[in-house]
Length: 243
Image (cartoon, rainbow, N blue to C red; front, side):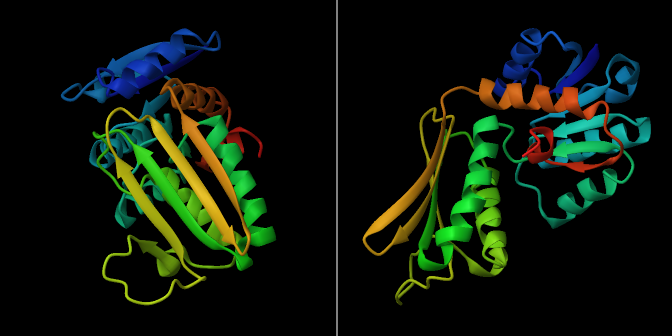
């Protein structure tokens, strides 16, 4: 049975991951960690580490896992370019699943977005709206950015060049080549994402709404179970779900 280490165990997501592990008969809880705990003293107690904390903490845990040859599932978002490069480098030595959203429904939505963008994207004004709870610190969400990346790639565009984050101060008509992002923060919203393709006379919307963090936790546990048998490399939930 695969033993899992959960970091940030006392947090909301950590507690939910522990719950998901308890409901899965293919894995067991190896060890839990919170800020101040030393992962180096627990390396013989787990096979795969799951991390949904903060970028700086994730990279520290990742370095430890690389040295110990342990696999890692990363659900943390908000990495800068240096952080992303560090994850790519780590994946040359260990197996890593890195996804801004572990939800099966979200990853199915990414597949649908690729299809929609290829069929109607060139004839559409594309807007992405996301909503999360008031405690979320990065904006737009990693999931929203991933959705934008999928759409941009399908259309042969560079998201870094065509993304528009808010429209305050823009005094010109909308450029159809852009992809717009809007962010909402409030209350206890678990996570909602809508990508709209506005055409003349009609629009297509692809929406995912999460009502429980268990959707993300179950996906992460599924990724950990899948990852144990993989060789070194950087994988996504699309790989885990064979999409």
